[in-house]
Amino acid sequence: MNSLYPKTQTTLNQLVADISQLTLIVHQTHWYMRGKTFFTMHPKMDELMADLDDQLDQIAERLIAIGGEPLSTFGEFLETTKLEEKKGKFGIPMENLIQQLVEDYRYLKEVFQEGIDISGQEEDCSTQDMLIGMKTDIEKTIWMLQAFLDKSPLAE
Image 1 (cartoon, rainbow, N blue to C red):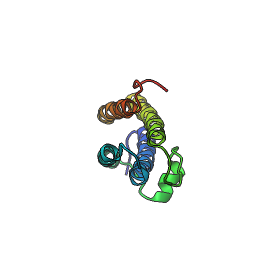
Image 2 (image 1 turned 90 degrees about the vertical axis):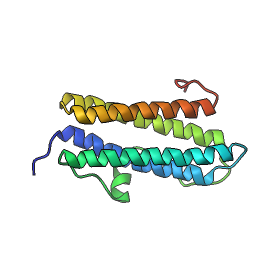
Image 3 (image 1 turned 30 degrees about the horizontal axis):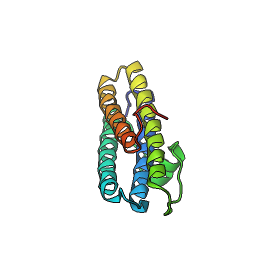
């Protein structure tokens, strides 16, 4: 079977690995959070996980549609992702947990941009369009997490 857009496929698999890892990071944040903002942030983590799951499904399906094979095991995800795996623990201030999420989402935004650029170079307009929309959603998430931290969306 011939596959289309080989560089795009590689980037989509990078996103499969990174989104899978980020979903675990958000889930860990969900489990280990405590504090006065628990009742608002706990359901927000559910929302973030659902959004990531939706993106992951769309990316994997697009990868299959262009002849690729999505990564599908924890081993493959860990081997491929650039997001750090950390053991969960209680006692980390909520602001620190959210700041780490901001950093991880910023990394993911960069991978989406790489995918946008690569799919454009390979003239895969359908994938490029999908990734542009997803990057926009990631930017909104960064803005909201930064607002929680009382920072502008672009602040470090």
